[in-house]
Length: 341
Image (cartoon, rainbow, N blue to C red; front, side, top):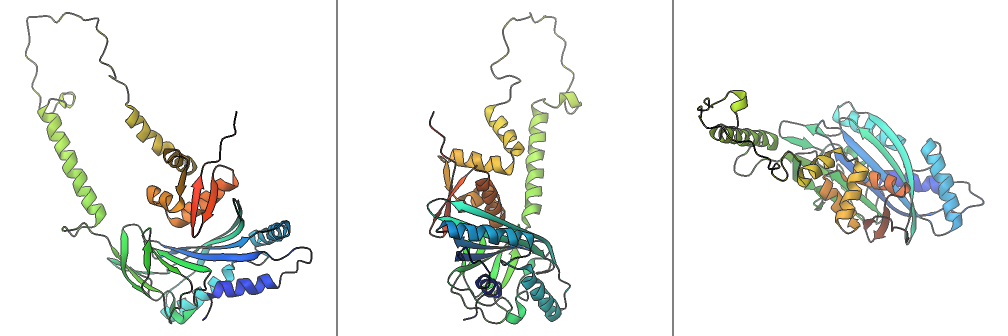
């Protein structure tokens, strides 16, 4: 079975690293996350992790990550994808380019110590966009990607407002994204995916159009209610001048009703959420869930992409704001334990 092209190159480079005083760290797994955009571009995140069992492994990884981030050493190579983009562009007669290249690394320390190298880039014009569909059927033309080995995973996430229509070979949908776990053999031109726009059941409208119509109906109802109750008098809409009265209302010393002019706690919470940074929003979610959540649950609650959550949590972990615990193929995210006073 063919291994995915990138990893074949990666492992060959790792075996050739000259490190006489340090052992080569053990490769653990490689994930390929592809986020399809509405424009047809695709944001790729390639993460390769290593088990660091000793000080020698840690020293070897520190040297590896330094060279990788500088773009001079082994690791996930963007040149591999540039070659693939040129090949697919020639076969499909579409202009393609690899842009926005970024390299990063992290070390996770929990029960096991894991080092991760992450390559992120944008592959332009990766998918074909039509009025109601986004097709990734020709993006893997020529079989350049290869097959997935047992320690590799590929996910393809649809654009916002789209869902899976067809996928070959068939696989599971995890958090809205197609997920192939190795070992997985792909035929020439696979995987092939077509996404379709999501419509409101029974109406057949695009979600944004349906949302706009709903907002218009609700707004009209509120306007009518305000007119009927005289709340629009200040605007001169639908209110008559008040009748004069001979009686004078005596002044009162009673204090205003409790809560008058004050913002409720729920309103304050809603406003505060909008003002939170991504990191603060994650910390707030964790506090609301007894200090720990699965990473997949954070993706579900925030509705962010898998790649964004993964990169954000790695940065937060490096800053000491969260802790990661690997459980099987899932990450358990928790707030650091507070020191005892």
